[in-house]
Image 1: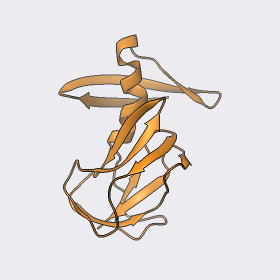
Image 2 (image 1 turned 180 degrees about the horizontal axis):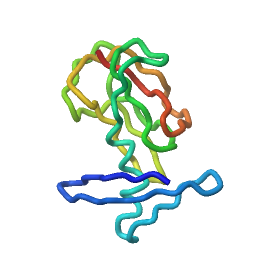
Image 3 (image 1 turned 30 degrees about the vertical axis):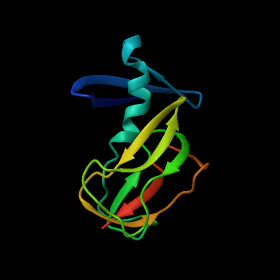
Image 4 (image 1 turned 90 degrees about the vertical axis):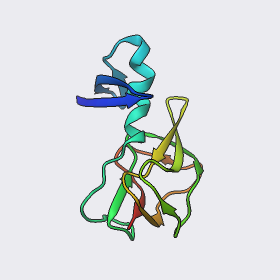
Length: 125
C-alpha cells in the first residue's frame, strides 16, 4: 500500500493506493478515486543521481500509463510546474511536470510507449 497527499486545484486529498493483481485500487471516497490514481504522475520526485538519463534531476512516472505527448525537448528551459509530457493514466490525461527549475537534459521515453510507475521519463539539469 502506498499513501499519497495530493493537491488538485487547491484541494488536498489524502489517499491510500493498494496494489492487487497488477492493478491499483484506490481506497478513497469515490469522488477522489480518479484523482488518486492519476495525480502521482503529476508530482514526480527528483532523485539525487540519474539511473540512465543525462541530467541530475530525474523525472519518473508516478503511475503506470501510456505516453500521449511529449511537450518539452532537450535543451528547453523549464520552470517548476511546467509540463514535460502527458501520460494517459486510467483513461485520464495527466501532465508530468518539472519538479524544479532546470533545463531538459534528456527525454527517456517516446510517444505511445507504455510506462510503469517509477520508470524514468526525463532528466533535468
